[in-house]
Image 1: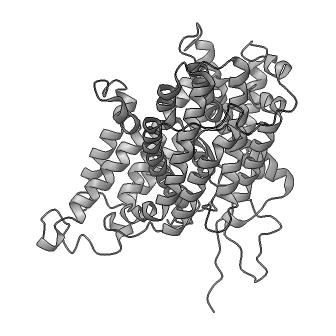
Image 2 (image 1 turned 60 degrees about the vertical axis):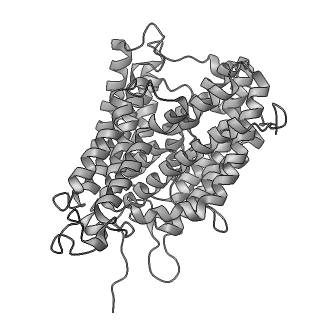
Image 3 (image 1 turned 30 degrees about the horizontal axis):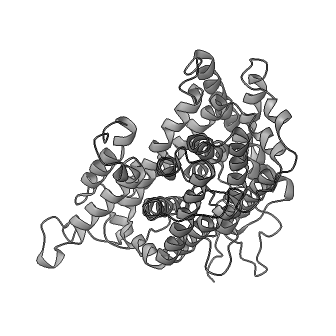
Length: 489
C-alpha cells in the first residue's frame, strides 16, 4: 500500500491538521490554536505595517491633503489591505491564491499617483481613485490571459526573479536602519544603525536559542525587544497614541465621487500590469517556499484577488493592492506555512483600519528596529532565489547567461538609481522596478534561447543530452515550476 503523504514538521499543525480521511492536510491548509494564530498573524502585520502606510504618507502631502486627511488615508490603506489579504488567503469562487500571501498598497503606483494629483487636493485623490478603479477592472478581465505567462517561468526564470525580489527589498531595510527620513538630522547616525544591528542580533539569537513556536515568532519578539530598548533612548514616542481616534471607519468616497481622466487611467493601467507581473513572481516564489507550486490556476486566482482588491479599494479610500514580498521572506524564515495565519493578519489589518488607536501601537516600532529585522527577512528571500537557481542547471545551455543578464539589468535601479534619469517619466513606472525589468528580461531571454527558432535547429538550444529531463530540471522549456525536495526542519 502506498505511503501516506507526509510533510516536514513546522509546528503549525492545529485542530484541523487531519482531514478525516487519515491523510494530513498540506501545511498551507492547516490551522493553528487561537493564540498562535493571532501572534503569528501579528508578526506578519509588524513586518508589513511600514510598507502599507508609507505610500499614503507620501501621496497625501504631495496632493495637498491636511495631516488629518493623510492619517485618514493611512487607516483606509490598512483596512483595504486587510480585505485584499482575506481575498487572497481564504478566497471564494475562483478568486484568491489560497496561499499565505499578504496584499497591501503597491509602491509601484506612488510616483504616477503623485504626478496625477499633485497640488490638486481632494480632486487629485478623486482622479487617482477613478483611475485605480478602471485599472483594477481591466486587470481582472485580463487575468485569464495574463496568468498563462506561468508557462514561461521555469526555475532559471523564477530563481532569478526571487533573487531580485530579495535584493530589491534590502535597500528598503537599509533605509529603515538609517532612520527612514533622509532629511532628518540623525539619518544614518550610529545610534540608528546600532539599534538596527542590535535588533538583527536579537532576532538571530532568538532563532538560535528558542525552540518550537517561540522560535517561529522570533521576528515579532525581536521587534518587541528592540522597541523596548529604543524607548529610553528617545527613539520612539507615544504622541501617536495620544492623538489617535479610538474609532475611525473609512467612510466610502470620503474625498468625493471618483473622477475619470484618460491620461490618469492609462498611467494606472500600466502600473497594474507591473503589479500583476510582480505578484506572479511572488506567487511562484511563495509556492516553492511552501512546497505547493503555484500553477496556472493558482496564479489566476491570485491575480483575480489582486485586481478585485484594487478595484474595491478606492471605494474605501484605499490605493492599488499588490503582493508584499517581505512577508514571503517571513514565511521562508519561520516555516509557518498556514494560510490561516496570514488570514488572521488580514483580520488584524481590518481592525487596525477601524481602530486608529490600535494602529498607533504598531507604529511605536522605530524604523531602525524594523530595518534590523528587515535585513534578515529580505535576505531570506534572496537566499530562497539562490536555492532555486542552484537547481536550475546553470551549467547547461545558456542558463547562466540568462541569469547574468537578468540580474545585471534588474539591479540597475538599486545600484544606480539615476541611470534612467533621461528617459520619459512614463517608462520609469517599469524601469524603476528592478523586479519587473529583471522578470521581463529573464522571460524574453528564455524565449529567445529555448523557444524561438527551435524548428530550424537553432544552435542556441541545448543539445539532447543537455535537455534530458523535465523543464523544471533543466531550467528551460515551458513547464510549470515543480516542487523542491522537502527540506528537513
